[in-house]
Every structure is written in structure tokens, then in C-alpha cells.
Length: 333
Image 1 (cartoon, rainbow, N blue to C red):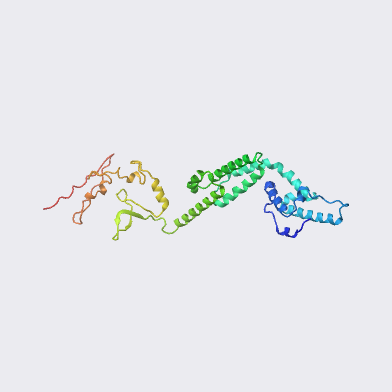
Image 2 (cartoon, rainbow, N blue to C red):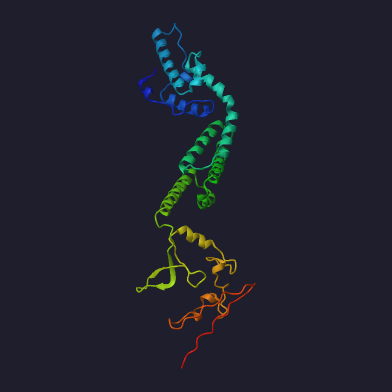
């Protein structure tokens, strides 16, 4: 009847039956029993032999095998549920009783799965854990949902369902994945496996970037100043001048560089700088040129140490007050 039963002792079903997961448990346990050639003890194809005409040995072998199937049924069932199965004699009776008891609660379980999927989000989980949690609910939802249509229509329904799940999955990701999410939503034929691979790679890049930012000195901005070159013609390090003609072309953090590229000046409507440092907005009242203010004008800066510029009093209060600039120095004969 059964060739090898000793190997069953090392096999187990990963899902334990409770009041909420009958569809998933029934799916796995049926495959487990069918792989061992014992499915007839569950679906009623193998019945208890009658003596006579069957012999006592045949009856004993059947009882022994049926008891082994019952033991595996009970080992995959919650102890609270198994207490109510003591009066059932065969594995077939236990199987039918469980089906009649827990398939009637499918509508309630469908509602519960839908509710859990609606509130599921990534939160503190990584991408893989978040995907596994969603995949577990999707699998049970598929087991509880029957597709009553043709094969061609069923394929379209499944494809539309996968598309909806993909959008729901992406919408609950962390804000750090916004750029990747926008690109993935524009694709038509990408499957969940490909989406998961892309998200895992992006998560790895974000994790490495966070570790680099935590290194000592990672927050210091290094600016390459235009026109400031060393003896070998290479650009040297400098500081960013507040409102001057010097501009920063590179910083150590790439995200800062991305943010500055998105900044738009409210005066000239050009990207890359703020209105405070706009060259078109600043105007020098001394040399009558744009790009700087009077305190930064090079024409009134001291040319040598023996001809300093006298300090000027602070500007007067008012809506528009400009301090008087000193007269340009005259040449002595």
C-alpha cells in the first residue's frame, strides 16, 4: 500500500492550521500528502477494509497507515483545534470536518486580508521583509479567490491584479524611494521580481550613502573656486564668497549638488543660485556695474599698505540709504 513510511518522520508542513489560514494550510498539506502517496486516505479513495472478505492483515495495514496520516494531520494543527477532533475515527473524517468548519469563514477572512493589505506599509522594514509580508497575504488571497472565466480572460484578470498589487506595493514605500518609484510606475511590462531586484539595489545604495555620510569630515563642503588656481594650473580649495563673483562648482556631497540644481532664483528665474547671490540683482552704486555691491567693489579697495581707505560710518536708517563712497585716489606728480 505504501512503500516507505519511515521517511515521513523527518518531513513537516511549514504552516500550522489556525482559525485564519485554512486555505494556505490545506494547499501545503495536500501537496505534502500527495507526494507521499497517501492522498487516497484524505479524498476517500481508500476506504476501511471489511472483514471478511478482506483479511485481518490488510485491515491492520490500513489502520496503521490511516493512523500515521492522522498523526501528521494533528501535528500541523493548532492544539486548541485538535482537542475537538478526538471523536473522529479516520483521517478522512478529520479532513472533511476541517473543510466544513473553516471554509464557511472564507468571506470574513477575505475581508481581513483586504484590510491588512490596505494598512500594510514598509515602515521600519527593509524592502525584502516588506515584500515577503505582502506576498504572504497575496498568496492566501489568491487561494480564497476563484476565477470563474475562460483561460484567456483569466490571464487578463491575473495581469490586471498583478498591476494593481504592484502600484499598491510601490505606494507604501519609504520617501527615499520616490525617484525609483516614479520610474517604475512608467513601465508597462515589468514584473514584481524585477521590481524587487531594482528596489533592493537602490536600498543598498542608500545604505552605503548613509554610512559614507557618517564618516568623520563627511559633512564638510569642499568648494572649487572659479579663477583660483595653483602653480600647476589645478583648481585649489577655497571658500564660497557671500554674494561675490566666485562660484562653487563642486561639493563633497552629491545630494547637495542635486538640491542646488533644483534651486531657482526668484529675480532672474535662472537655476543654480538664490536671489541673495543673483548677479543681475546686485548693483554697485560706485562703479555703476552689476554683479556686486559697493562693499565688494574692487575699485575702492586699498591698492597698497601705505594708502589705506579710511573707515566709513554706518549707513543711515531709512527705506533706501547708501553710504558715501570715498573718492578715488589721485596720482601725485
